[in-house]
Amino acid sequence: MLGREGSGVQIEGATALVTGANRGIGRAFAEALRERGARRVFAGVRDPSRLEVAGVEAVQLDVTDAAQVAAAAARCGEVTLLVNNAGVLRHAALIGAATMDDARYEMEVHYFGTLALCRAFAPVIERNGGGAIVNMHSVVSFFTPPDSGSYAASKAAQWSLTNGVRSELAPRGIHVVGVHVGFVDTDMASGVDAPKVTPASVVAQALDAAESGLPEVLADETARNLKEALPRDQEVVYPAIRAAYVEATRG
Ligand SMILES: NC(=O)c1ccc[n+]([C@@H]2O[C@H](COP(=O)([O-])OP(=O)(O)OC[C@H]3O[C@@H](n4cnc5c(N)ncnc54)[C@H](OP(=O)(O)O)[C@@H]3O)[C@@H](O)[C@H]2O)c1
Image (cartoon, rainbow, N blue to C red; front, top):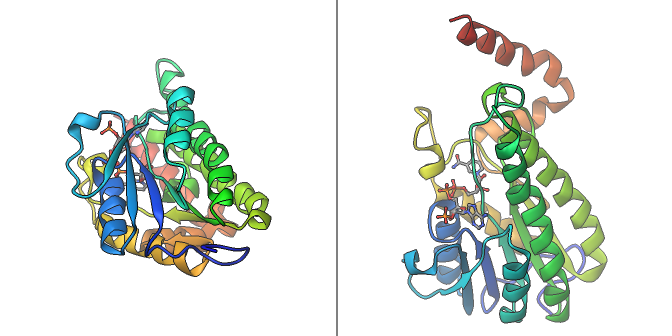
C-alpha cells in the first residue's frame, strides 16, 4: 500500500508521470524523482525528440489533447504519483487582449488539462493501492495582476480544482498537493528582472509534501506572504497593484 487517506506516497520504488517534463520545473521534477529512487519516471512531453533527461521514458502528451491523455493513462498503468506541471504564460490582459484566445488556452492547459489528467489517473493510482497527485499552481492563484489577468484566473481555477479533488480523492487513498510559488528561474520567467528561486528548491518541497501528506506548499516568501494576506487582500495587496498599473498606463 503506497498511500491511504491522510498519508502521502512513498517515492522510492514508485512510478511517476510528470507533465511538461522536458524543461524548467517539470524537468527538475523528473530528475529529482529519479534521484529519490522512483522505479520508473514517465516524462510527458509534446515533442519526445526534444527530451534530454536521463533515465526517464518519454510519453507523447499535450494535456489539452483528450486522446493523448487517455493513451498516457493506458500506457502508464503502474503510476502512483502524477505531477501536473505543464503550463503556459501568454501575458494577456483580461480586457486589453485583442481576443479571448489566450484566456481560453490558459484555461485549457491549467484548468481543463489538470482536470483531465486527474480524472484519467485517479482510477490508475487507486488500482495501484493509492498514491499522490501534485498540482503546480502559482502565487497568482492568490491575486490577479492586470498585465496577465487571464493566466492568473486560470491558476485560481486550478487551485480551486485542487482543493475539490483533494476531498474527492481522499477516500480513494490519493493525497493531493497544491504548490504555490513566485518567480522560478526557468524559461517562463526569463524576461523577469526580480529574485527567483530555483526549480530544484520548489520540487524538493513539493515531493516532501507528497511523501509526508501535506496538502499545500508555499514554496517561497512571496507565496507565504500572499497567502497570509488573503483575508485582507483588498487593503494590502490590490491598492499598490492598481496604483502601479495606473502609473504605468498614464503614458
Ligand atoms: N517559472 C515561474 O516563475 C513559475 C512560477 C509559478 C508557477 N509556475 C508554474 O510552474 C509550471 C512549470 O513552469 P516552468 O516555469 O517550468 O515553465 P516553462 O519553463 O515555460 O515550461 C513549461 C512546460 O510546460 C509544457 N507545456 C506547455 N503547454 C503544454 C501543453 N498544452 N501540454 C503539455 N505540456 C505543455 C512545456 O512544453 P514545451 O517545451 O513543448 O513548450 C514545458 O515543458 C507551470 O504550470 C507554471 O505555470 C511557474
